Length: 103
Ligand code: HEC
Image (cartoon, protein in one colour):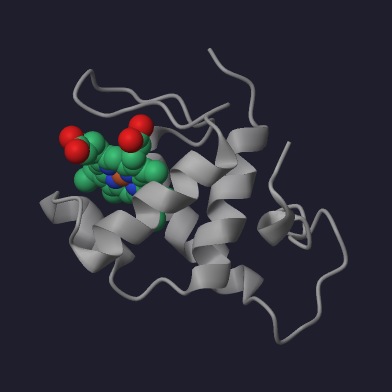
């Protein structure tokens, strides 16, 4: 179960009605095309040094994205990708990957 602070979240990427201003779906999709290069479109990584994201807890994924963005968790590519992500985008991406089936 998602904790209350995530309860208002729309299911990612147009599965639920979202106020237009809340999140730019095109921007999220552009981001996720980049994620797929390493983490797989299905959230299953193709390389053994990249973690699977599918089925991971949404709060955990969101916290990791925040940690990359802030530099608390250090990784060159992830920090680079995360630098312009908004909180809403990170939440939507975390919700999306957590909804995918594990391998
Ligand atoms: C260039 C390859 C690459 C791309 C592109 C990439 N990642 Fe990553 N990602 C990694 C690697 C490698 C790690 C593991 C980092 C580490 O070792 O600390 C990682 C870690 C993560 C984690 C933490 C997972 C965990 O189990 O702790 C999340 C969440 C994540 N990436 C999300 C994303 C998202 C969202 C995108 C798209 C915006 C993205 N990644 C794009 C390579 C990539």
